Amino acid sequence: MSSSTPAAGAVSPGAIVRGGSLLRGSTTARYGNPHHALTLAGATLVFYAVDSLSTRAEQRWGFRRAKPGSAPGRELARVRVQDDGTYAAVLPAGIQGSVLVAIDVERFSYAPETGGRAFGLLGAASPGWQEAQGGRRAVLNIDLPHPSYCEILGLLGLWLVAGRVTSCGTGDPMPGGKVEVFDRDLTQDDFLGSDITDSGGNFRVFFAPAVFRGIPSLPPPFDAIPPHELIGGPDVYFRVSAAGATLLDEPASAGRADGRENVGRCSYHDLCVQHRPQIGVDTLTLWTRIGVYEVPNGGGLNDFDADGFTASGKLAFTGEIPFCGLVAQQYAGEAVSYRFTWAEWTDLSTPPADADFQPLTGTHINTGMPYGSIYVQTGPNPWEFDTTPVFPAPDADGWIAVSQDPDFVRDGWPMLSVRTAVLVPPVASQGDLQSIFDAGDPVPAGPLRDRPRKFSFRMQMKTASHFETQPVPVPIHINNSFAYLRFELDELAGNPCAELENPSGGPLHVHPRWTVAHPYLYSYGVELHRQGGASMTHGEDWNDPGNGVLWTAAAGETGTHDFAYADTGSCSYHCSITAHRRLTSGSGMVGTQQHILRTFCVE
Image 1 (cartoon, rainbow, N blue to C red):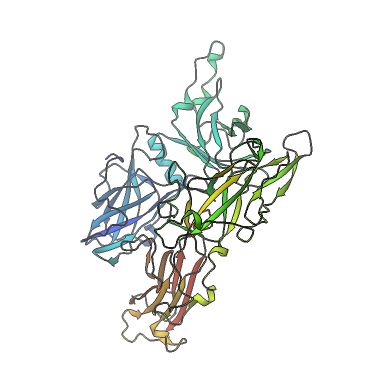
Image 2 (cartoon, rainbow, N blue to C red):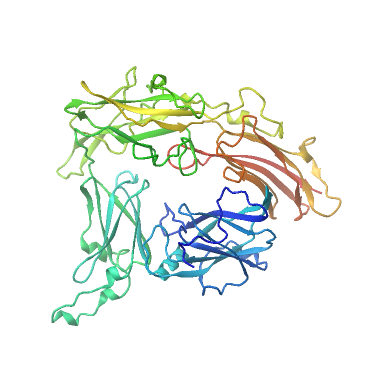
């Protein structure tokens, strides 16, 4: 089956499936880069029903080559992995036991097509099915290790040279650089391909072995030289450039160095560039990103959606966020000043009027964060220099006058950093929002209730005779609050030190009760387990069927659950709730989670 053909059993991840079992999840493919991972986008996943497997065999993802149609068990569904690495498939309603997962791929969506095909088994797991509206659902995430992914590339006839480009001085990633990869050959070097580094400085170049294994005919007496280049992998070296300037130009001999000669099917290489960054004195002043997220402009929404969330993860912003872009010293021969203005949406659907915008001033921004540096040469080599940071000094109207020092350069600092807590203070401290009391009750009316807040920002530039406003306002959501979280066990409500009894000798019934509230809630989960025993879980996340992007109302979401725990014993037990928020400071979702734990013993 071609991986580009719509697969049977595929369904939208947010669909409500009636009379079936919805299995969805994400895919991760490790390729040797410790800072980044790929997905299985473009491949077809095939699900089979199998008998129960040993615990050690479950969720041990890998790859074992097989012939198509030879997998054990009854085929349940096929589904193509979407370009974002997720999948969703409908399995029969009554499916029980373990599910075996296979992969059938002719081309990953991010790699070239070679005419090859790979089919094999990835692993098996017992999905934790939960009853939901219209049918059952479960999440099964697939994380393929580095050797297995590379074996699949081999069956497809592909090689991968990957790496990361950083600054030699600071270790900061270099985005937007062009990386060219070459193979040191016996007579003439081969160009293997090129890539543009992403926001994390990562690059990937896929190529077929024919690119580097061909050797031209040699005249006598050199025709007697053995064809060394037909053995092993390529001998790689690199060239890195940005904005028309070459930052790294390795000699061909670098391809014979340790770690570069005869590299394997998937090789990873750390590169660093050390240079004095340069900008033209008379160039554009332009706002392009919030952290790693490219802002909307006349060409489209870029890394955002129409509602002001990041397109990936539907995230709102929190903390101190960097507004990044280009800063010129002069425009048409005149000194440049720039500023940002802001306005809040009175609701979530009506954009603010021009008259509503006001400037970000020194109160709103971090004036201790530089927007550039003064570079002073200290030696004859262009990489010998000292730097002095230049800090923004906004006037009462928010204007920042760009330094006119001839040695001023933009070197990766943001245009300014916004303290979002000045615009949207947290509703309360974490201690006020997290408790074991009042679990199951709505959030009381008053200061503990939170709501979504949406703002628009615009950048402006002026000189003595020019004034320009960046034409597309950028809407984003902002929040700086912890989630309101209450959690208790009914069995401990009257006596927090009670020891529970299980006189029947059957399953132990435990009844957690909770309240959770946040306008940008990502997920919450309740877990029960015995010390050293099995776990039982219950919970939801924002993209489950029936949940909207703005998840909970101001009064929150309340619930209770009956855990019938069969793995009983005279031991200590843990029952907890964990909540995550859909927030970012400009580089992926923030890692802070909230957690309430209740412990008890059983007689």
